[in-house]
Length: 287
Image (cartoon, rainbow, N blue to C red; front, side, top):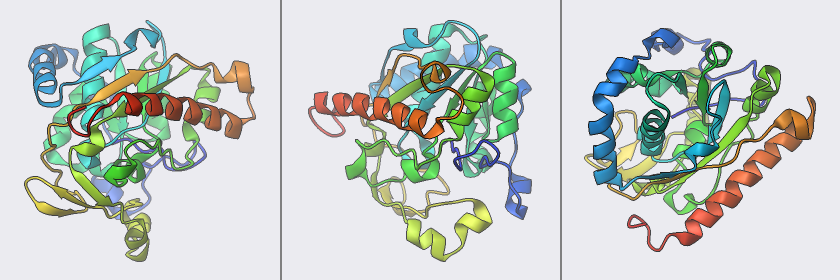
């Protein structure tokens, strides 16, 4: 689960100023292991195909080389299965040697069970990590909606929730890289998400202590009632569909200053594509 915390690039979620932040691994560019990816990719993609019946379209819209910022919506609580499906599809399409990094929230980076994902390129969502990856010519995946989006109620699965966070716009303009929107549907059906718990999180001071905007409540395996999703859960086999849209040159259309206009444009493109995908689906879970 990847989080762009605020409107400016100077305030990324992973740049922790509290004790919890000291125990969260940052991840390094060097942690990504192409040999590991090549070894596990066939079995991992087979598992994703069988369990989630995953469909990924539009990978040809991603520039074939050079730095690029992929900006997506994502779903499914802290497990975010649509993220892993996209990572597997990217590596299969472009090859394991093309550098590709995914920026992740504190809680994702802190979960021991998810540490192998660092070999796929998972790093803490900090400004310095994003810039370092782009400066090396990598593709970087960000999810501005972060914990707010992945824990939205299941009946809001067709909504792109970027939470007003436009830090990715600043980053793309500063580094002069294209933005490639990515939309997905189905992930919010891998459990029954009942409430994001934003009011409860504020009341308990979780934002101040742990940079958590939510304390979600869901019905999920194997826990039944799952509060916080801190230990993750077993995702139900809902059908996942991912669509990669055409790249957007923000500088060409919006210059260096119209951050709000660029943000609205990217979100509008994503919402329109998600609406179309949702309309084509026949049944929840079944797809």
